[in-house]
Image 1 (tube, rainbow, N blue to C red):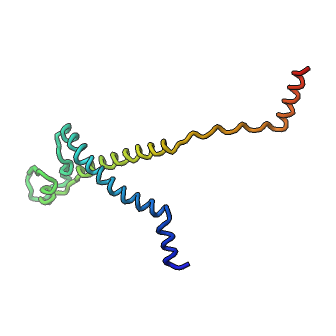
Image 2: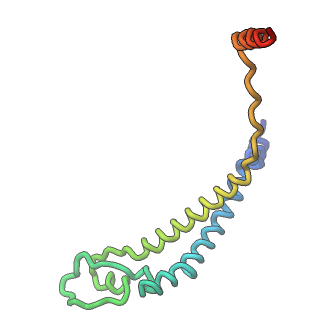
Image 3: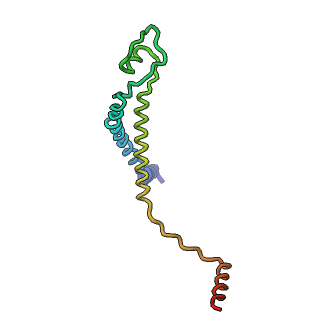
Length: 145
């Protein structure tokens, strides 16, 4: 079998095509989740806690030498001043995005599994063993007497 023929069989197989479609849809789905987080969830969270942008949440771990106690408006300003910072705000945003994505995927898989479930017919009763058959015959013969 030639190289071209092998590649054609590989590329046309259902699993490869399903994977390609999944990756493309996953990329688009990621953009939707980003929009949900950034445009819908984060503004509500910001309204509740009063912080409109989590990306600028940070703690100064070690101050740069020769810098006074200036309060910085952004993470970039604190880093520019030479401080060592613990920037946790972007992590919060990414964590919220992950949790929403995981929740949506869980709900989708749960729905798909529910659609896939079909009522399986009840299994046929097992045939009685030879001993059981003999005992049933004895019982029936005693009933008739």
